Amino acid sequence: MPKILLTGATGYIGGSILTALLRDAHKETSYAVLIRNPHAADKFRAHGIATHVFSGLDDLQVIEEVASGCDAAINTASASHPESAKALIRGLAKRKQATGTPTFIIHTSGTSILGDHAEGKYAGDRVYSDVTDDIYDFERQHPEEYSQRVTDLAVVDTAGELGVKSYIVIPPTIYGKGTGFFATISQQIPHLTRLAIREGQTIGINEGASIWNHIHAEDMADFYSFLLARILQDDKQVTSGRSGYYFIQDGEHTWGDVSAGIATSLKKQGILATDAIRQESADWVGERLGFGSPQLIRLGFSSNARARDDRARALGWKPKKPANDFARHFDDEVATVVAEFQ
Image (tube, rainbow, N blue to C red; front, side, top):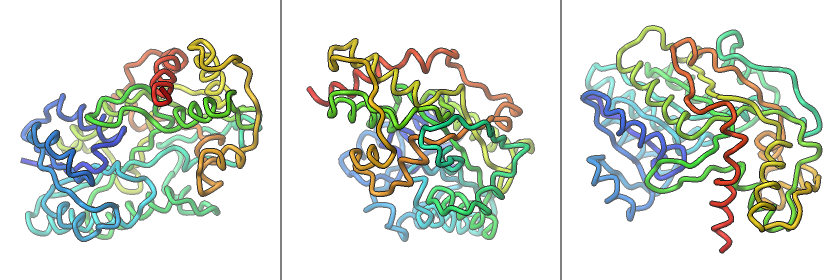
């Protein structure tokens, strides 16, 4: 019976993935989680999930030890912590050596790895494919150091060296209500919504012209379950390592679309008096959001990061949400954030 370790299970991404995995009841598969909050343990154990408590991502010895008792790991705890990812892989390598059974890791990255420094000033026309573009080589040769790219490369390289298969899933903006036991709200749109409420007006980064993809939380989680099933079936079409990068998406938006969606919803809900958008610089927004690194706001909130999920589509996966779902989701997501202030 394969045992799958999931990190980040109390989070928005990891929690939604776990719900999808439990729903799909992969044949003869059991699950384990690594969590920091011991008070959350009972919730997981009630669902038959082996629960391990650790002190955090720097608790490398525990991470490696727990992983050594598992056949695979799905890493959603951080896209920017290479040492914990490598600890997972070292543990999986020990498991393979002890049992003779292949092991693998599914690591979660994000499309900010593709981001330019447009800062909302223009729409980029470069669209990356995970089939016709060599994303591993793109990351390896990129002149700008960025923690998510560093982590991706660490996963692929360490796994290759230790004989563990690696798969990197690269979601774009994730929107919609999560389905996990705990966190059910995403990052980008809620951050910008909170800023609008605090400022009394919706803030856009410059013209908001730059373009990203998006995917609903449920479609994102469904892909992980889909990918896991294909890997467990030993499907030779599912490529790994340097060819194991998987974009997932179900449409595109500009950052101006995001600002407009937030502004319209906040005015409709009586939180703001105007749906006008005030333009500010990326650095100004980053400071107000409390981001320590200007790079994060530039790459993750105002860049062009466009991708085609050719590899996933070739395997037969496709999102289920309709094309207009992103545009019409703002009222619910904004209302969730508004409730935080009440």
